[in-house]
Amino acid sequence: MTRERNPLDGLRQELRRGTLVLAVLSALRHERCGADLIAILAGANVPIEPGALYPMLRRLEDQGLLVSEWRVEDARRRRFYRASTEGGKTADELTTDLARLTAGLQSLKEDGE
Image (cartoon, rainbow, N blue to C red; front, top):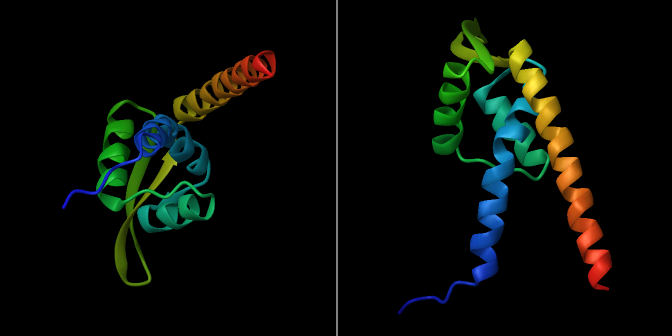
């Protein structure tokens, strides 16, 4: 038995994927370990699975947008991440882009009403 999927679910997922990098860069303006980052994003209604987050963190670090370091905290070895200077600038630019896009979409909506 197959469950019919609502097309809106797929569209929401695409929209969410497009904003995850911005959410991660914004949350990492302050240094955090991965587990804390997952909790903070969930609290901001931007949940992300570890299997999606950690590859993204590695990719963003490879792109020079994040820096990380290993430390022992509470007798556990953890990796802490934060946005690099370039990562902070990128987050600012993406935030501005998103605000412009949102304003444009709002304008289109109001035009149609």
